[in-house]
Amino acid sequence: MLSPLADVTPITGVCDFCGFLCHPVSSCLLQAVTLFINMAKSLISPSSKSITANESFCTNQILRSQEVNKKIGEAVKEGNLLKLIFVVNDIMKSMSRHPIRIAVTGDSGNGMSSFINALREIGHEEEDSAPTGVVRTTQKPALYSSSKFPNVDLWDLPGTGVTSLSMENYLEEMDFSKCDLIIIIASEQFSSNHVKLAKAMQSMRRRFYVVWTKLDRDLDTSALPELQLRQNIQKNIQENLQKEGVEVPPIFLVSNFSPDSLDFTKLRDKLRRDLSNIRYEDSLETLSGICDRSISEKALSLKNSMLMRPQETAVSRMSDTADLQESFENYQKLFGVDDGSLQQVAQRTGTLQMGCMAMKFQELHTQDWRLRLMMSFPLCMFLKCLEISWWYGLWNFFTRRLRLWRQLLIVEIVAQNAKTVSRSVLKDNTHLTEVI
Image 1 (cartoon, rainbow, N blue to C red):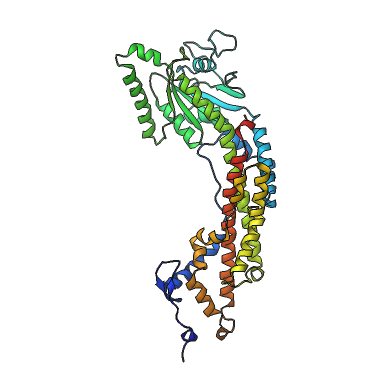
Image 2: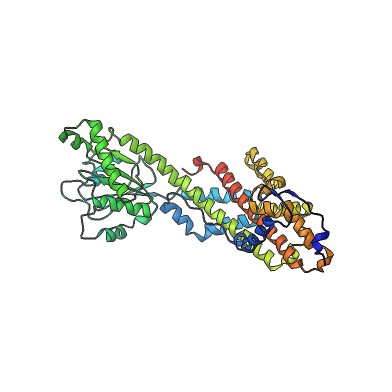
């Protein structure tokens, strides 16, 4: 007796999955069926959280705020990009009132207090200056401010030799996790304590600099030309850090008694840029990460509801392009990234190019190879074979599952597009001038 498949006219076409001429039930399709077994898990798993290269205490405060997460989550749940913009701008304005914490640390005797006075551009004899001297003068953390860097807290910390604390206890005692930027002061030699401090800052994902503070004395006592001496000091610092796997940070060679010469100007310029990044870029990246997580949670909730009602979800036929397009557009509206929603945001914000950001249905199959496979010619022909009346519904469960998985994948693609669009919208409509 002939197989029912024998009555189906063999059709050969270019497979969208492998790129070769294939029969509908060729080995290419066999690969597809095995891939579907593991596809469901990958489709319903949430995306990983976005993180920044450097984290600050300011942004960590945001992450711990239930109110911030709730506000962003509500805007995402409503699929309301305009509301999301207003919420993020309000949070950023609030963040601008939080002081940025800078810690100055290093071996005792390296000139941390003198450096703070030089950075603040005040003399050591002035009333508000940090006390300096040949003996150790800073026995406990001291807070200073400067009109040169408004809304910034400068913490002068005890050196790493002031107490009998081990380096591990010193790091815990000084609580660097509550600082946004750390300046490691060195002079005479770049010691193992300096390397341990740098390694700890890198593991804590904190911005940090290395500042060599007594270059004037080195120039007076060294027979080397200034350029060669500077290169030797920088090379020594770099090699000591690299031996311990520490990425080399910005390095500045200065004189505490000449705050207008050497690398002090570069240091101040770099510090101002990083203060702006901490207050704006880091905060915006953190808020975008919260938005990404909220979108992932929304997509996961939607997928779970679809899995709970598979027969209601997977009612369309795999070859029904009109139904597939309708589903795609409905998901776009749920996430607020359909053409109408983006046009509205473009008009309200004045960013007219945003109206062109909506993903088109014709682009859908190019977004993920799995969806391209599920919409491919061989697979559609294979499903037609399963749906013929001879099987008496034997393969209905299998075909419904394939349709359901296709819907889950479309949700995943739309959610990813929503993350891309929301990040672009927030970047274009959250301005630095509003948060400084």
